[in-house]
Image 1 (cartoon, each protein chain N blue to C red):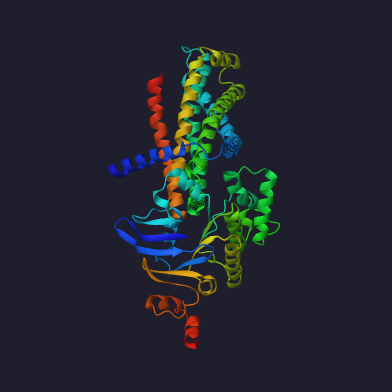
Image 2 (image 1 turned 90 degrees about the vertical axis):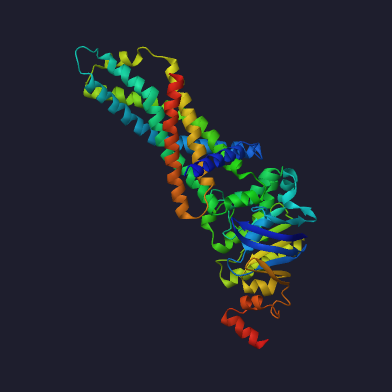
Length: 247
Length: 250
């Protein structure tokens, strides 16, 4: 078990070394990068926006319910909602959502290429298949993930505002007052650093599990599950570490 | 010419190739034949560098493939084309993009030059009006022909075909065999074909290496394959009732 873990970690870093080598042709790399950014960014926007609006709405309602006391000023609902959304909920929860969405897509795509010998075809041509297939995906994720999370934060804040406006749990004036109080740019920097790290983990781990498949459809399904579970686990551990380091 | 000297391959403790010595001649269709699981595909993977043999050398015109530098190996790989058993066309690309892919990667041709070359290769394998189609929209035989078109796009010196007739009907198999032979002779390519298709064996095999349980059990050509005195080869060739009848008539 422990031996297998160390072998897998070793294989992962050998894989990364192969991925981070100079692309065989830059023009092909940039073409693939644009394609991946489009597929990942535009393709995930709808699900990210729907989930974010829902998250924003629920956080606001629950926060308002918890601090229903005359001793606590009502603007704190907006303040707590914003802080939760910016610092934790959107960067972490949406990243975990993207692991299921983008990560499984990456594992399935690369894994099916392995199973159908398309990766072998690249290798026979003398192309570094890991770099050719995976590098554009990792770079695209590093660019797209922070953008998606920023949009997610905006959608969540919009969702929370409309919840306040519709339910009247606190006045919109107090809510906006709390939302804009004690704002620190560092909170956003912290959120973006997290999403950057989570994006790298998601795309590289998902690619690794797809790339190393040996077998057929059954192994492809197993690799997909493993990719999602391992990425999520690493993201949760790194979330704790990054929070301890940065806050 | 490709020469194999003392090739042995292991997977863990299990040895799958035993001291293989054979050669594949320039400008000819060279077959590797044998039963399923005999080691043909492993041998071909050792030939093209997808696997490394534990013992022995693979010589391309006296150049040791597995022990040359990365840059030299890269150049040699650019001279190879390969047709895989399942065609291995890239699903996300159209046929035009598939055939043009090696040109994108290895040449500095303009878009028009690439399109001309792609159309030439597709015409050569008798595929028409498929440029904008995706591999999933083609039949098995058309996929194989598209894979051959991709393999010859960069004018390879060496063409490798792994079970090119698997899953095809007898008539389409004949077309593929004929195409491989014509292309080999027309462009002077050293072609190596992995097959267990008996029709291919007796019609296109200018040299034949018979692999039996990981050993090279016989070497010859299409003219003497039916009259060999190798028991293992005869068991393979005359396994079916149809071929047994042919044997009786010989």
